[in-house]
Length: 311
Length: 263
Image (cartoon, rainbow over all chains, first blue to last red):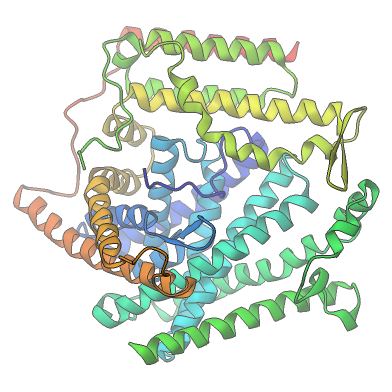
């Protein structure tokens, strides 16, 4: 089958009950908000539409593209769903997809489903819609660029949340799981960003009416920008902080003797997640994160320009 | 693609198949929560839990090893827990030398690692069994009875119903891409990774438009057949005596697992 599991679907047994329950509570509260908002805003017509859109996200995850060495990337779809359907409907659609994957295919557990929905459905939609909304009136290139950044950040946020939950459950060491998850997903996120940007630019050209500026009120829109921006900021601040933590990973590494192996990586743009002349301070790791985001943002805006110029 | 390509239901005439879907859903959830609550190294309880899995397999006439065969799906995720082998302080068991690294496996770490794997393996088997003995629409209906909001269950029901249609659509798109991507042996085809991702994105966009337009047609067809905002089932659920007995027995067995795990 073409169905491709992603490393973000946590199976049952890997999170302890306390963490699972806390995630369920957050998820249930957010979803009940989403249900009441969609019930209010949408007519009965939207229900089949959202069902088909959930099937679309599921099917779109099968569109893969070869990357290198036999591996392939594919879409996760959280940001795409939020931009196209709006945040609440996007969340419900992603929840349906994740629930079906867990119930029918055991891709992700049942007890930890709350965590999986939070990581892959709610956080991604909040970042995607919040950032997209913040550039509503801007040019197409800027919009596409921001969507790309949001897609990349959404994958990173999912990875960060997953890593934190695994750590809180005592399943993995923080100092190992954060760099590992964030490292792998930094690459997966680039694929997600490229596919999402290209899909949205295709829809912008063919059916711009479907991406109407939406009926969301100015107040609701400001809240989304705030929430999305906050989560994005959290990812930017926490991830370099956690992976740059000097007295965890590095002491363990020093003790068991692979710090020398870790240090002679062939190249690194921002060594150790710090800015060299600032030393190893909190400010430095945070700045390193910000620099990373700006670089990605610039690249995505350029790609957005390129797409616009060519087609 | 055949309409039941994604179906995981196994048609059998058995006691468990005939149970009310709500009973099966609730018992599965209780089993999962109970197992996740077991402390590390509760070997007796793990064995008992496994016996319960085997018994359910037998009772549903799927064969002893049915869930065992399909349970490897969660195995790759075990990698994420490997670090606990080395990170929990305890008596060193053995030392691995991989290249220049020396990794010390401690007894406490080993205990935790094995416990995580066993728990996860038991839980995934119960989840596999649940969808093998319950028709998916019945399961969704049961969720609705268990107070999952109708919007959500309806979306999931639609998702399940149109999964294979849109999968067919994707397979057509993929086949079209394949047929446009012919190359002479030895020569390189297509552009770089960015170009390929762009093609995939356009395919996703195309799929979106097709799905969107299809949803319009589906809605019109539903209205034409009298849809008034609610889906119905042909298998109305009613609790019978055997459902109550089965629930009571299952809860007692799960409680016994907890007792075995803690004393």
